[in-house]
Image (cartoon, rainbow, N blue to C red):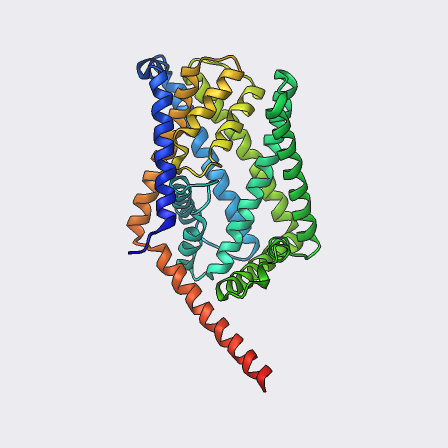
Length: 356
């Protein structure tokens, strides 16, 4: 009986998160945490929901702009459904909010869009999102550092991570705009191509194909690129209001810098390889609220609100996926098997010609 190490690791990380959440709640009164919402204003709650919906619509608009720049036209409503499905899978998958992208690309095949081309538009969308989010995170953390004098090891870690992020972003766009591969270059720098493996050869070819489409977008669709960046900034404005209203639901009227700080800790929590960031999200908000001089119970209550929002979206996404009757892994596997067979045939032909 073979062991599925991926499932075993996911289960282990999930247990770690559950134990972490247990110890956090053990030290706090659940009644006091829930009492934080007892004076919640229904109007503020409606505004919070509208802010969340606005973010989802803006992010879908950005993806739609990227698709249209490549002469791909899919009804906005359909794209919105596919995006919700992708978000739900990302939330349920361990790691930095990734995992739903292949499913979204698979959904696009319903509209006679090649899987690889669909995936390339999703990668472009993802990188633009990471770029704008990362830059705004750095600006926010810099403002927080100036106001709250973050020093010591934590401040140094933030500085180093910020510099690495900026260097990677600059290198990425420099190479893209000069028709040079970025991820493929890293692939080669790691000397992975020296390893004799059919799987790695297939990954290399697929990576080269996808990055070729990305280079074409950045070089030939600069207006669409700028438009996508603008939409990303607008989504951050909507996110500011989301957390502004969330804090007001708890009875706190906090400023822009404090909101940046809270959002930063939410983002960092999602990077941990724990499904749904269980325990990590709560621990992060405890740290953020403590540094801001706010009650710990309020931080946990905010984490619960964020989690409730994500779980609701995930439930909707899973129901939509079931309704559409898609089994994404099978479609992807079929796609890559056919590509692999073509590639293997090509390699065999080359080998025969060399022997001759």
